[in-house]
Length: 103
Image (cartoon, rainbow, N blue to C red; front, side):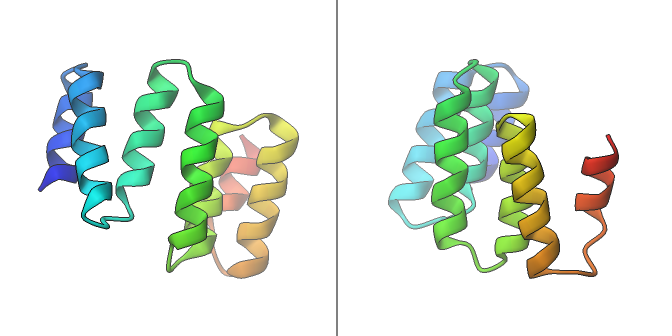
């Protein structure tokens, strides 16, 4: 519920309230809230913080291919290519990394 509320706040451009929701979700071990918090940091132009938050997700995620793929959105081109390559190595049948690379 906290993660969903955070998403609603992001959609309403209430980024501080969204960050609070995601932090509370993380406090109760809702791993996916790292992705929402990274989005908040990205929208606030804190790219390094967004990247770091996605790195925390990679450390905890069950599906690392997806986490690497998502982290590629928050870093420079070379690091993004590395993350997408890793996503492909972890899940060779995954289609999204190919789309991101093409873009």
